[in-house]
Length: 226
Image (cartoon, rainbow, N blue to C red; front, side, top):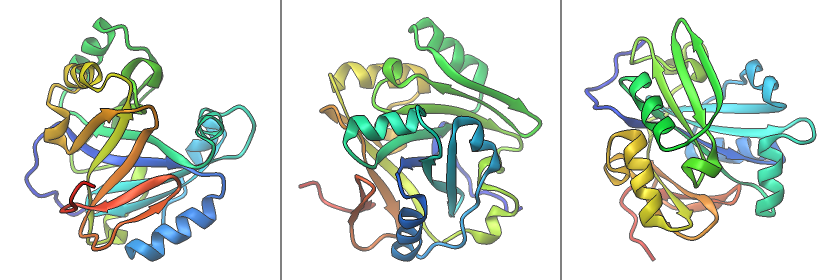
């Protein structure tokens, strides 16, 4: 596996959108972003989902799609009235401390996994607000289990540089995220603005022209706000 460039933690490692038609959305992302073949993780069937995970540099873009009724992703698509942003995954340096901080704020965990190369929890979106937030500690730090085998050989010359979320009471939610992540969200490329549509934008380093797909705006890293 190729070594990562120098980086600091925490950092945004993966962004996830939810779509009814996985193949159509994944195909269009692949074409627009010049991506290689995605990884289909059989493990997401546990959540009643199919997925496609693309490697962009050492970051990842995932599309999930429900395969059965009453999935969290399916309910969110219904509430949003269509495809939408779903989840942000942050690599952290010390998971236990971040979990304890979340517990002190009354933030529930909706999923936990601990295997030889990854320890991770997912935080309830109603508590952390804006989206499901994953706190992930890969071992070694350069690895990323969810990218699939040999993801670095399929990686495109781009990266996920940030995201924007619309949340009720952005100031209060920013404080909440700061406490859980141990860092200012904006320093991680994450902007929290007032609204209620959740994850609305994913910022891509190396993208030249913005586009909207699956209810999410994909924006260049040097774009100007409207």
